[in-house]
Every structure is written in structure tokens, then in C-alpha cells.
Length: 71
Image (cartoon, rainbow, N blue to C red; front, side, top):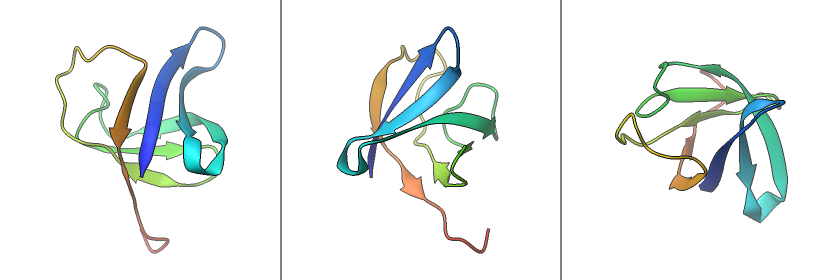
């Protein structure tokens, strides 16, 4: 699914999912540099992010994959 990742001064990192008109803060990340690992958002979703350079500028739109509920 396409998601936009951005950084806000007051809330930190957040994602926006246009198809669902959903914006949620990112509450946990697997990797400090964000890319190539998973992120957990406030609504409980865990999304796999693609590999990208660590210096990728935000905001950016990427294809993320939602992990299953069993993980």
C-alpha cells in the first residue's frame, strides 16, 4: 500500500494512508534509520518499509507492506 511518511515538530514521525484517509503517528521502529525494517503505528499496524538510503528526505511516499496479525 502507498503511504506517505513525514516528520512533524510536535508529533515526530507519522504515516498517512491516502486510500483510507488515515494519519497515525509512528510509535516504534525496528531500525533507527527507518528504511528496510518495520514500523509500528498507533493504531497497531506493523508496516514493512522498503530499503532506501539513510539520508532520504521526508516527506516521501513509499510502497509499504502490512504484516499479518500473527506477528
